[in-house]
Length: 215
Image (tube, rainbow, N blue to C red):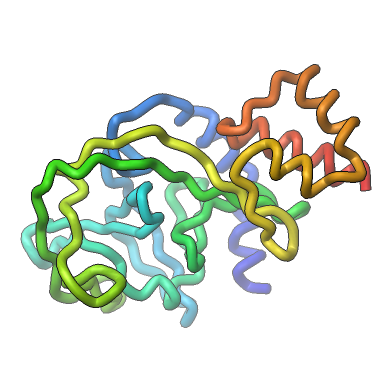
């Protein structure tokens, strides 16, 4: 409940922030530069820091000011309730950081991108000042090192949506229409008349709210 209240407190302004960010970027991160964020932990403590989201995996990255301002990966996202970037709210999940666009109906977006590795790696390690959330020195399988995100070329960006209480995953418009199969014809008409684009999160939010109103 506390998490929902925290999300609702800033959700309205976040939609304006998303609209302002509708630009094409070659960065493998969601934001071109690390942004000041507030990490709200499950134990209710809060920590400020410069953070970003790595699009290929959805991992939260941060700048460790105690270790030469190195870029590091947040290795224990399960300790995080949510992260605020200004008015935008993100929550951790098994698939990475998700932005909360609506709580009624439930609608989340995972921002993703493919990458081309230039072949250079960088190691990570140590402990951050973000409430002792440790960075890791290996990938999620426990072996090897994490590729340096700055040395990777970003491919096409795309969105993955999580919808409803069961967080049904939707990767394309065909899957979306299948999710609302009983309203498929009405939704297709709405998509055509309103020129809805799948990779535009705000347009999809508009579509989801319409679909929800038909139930």
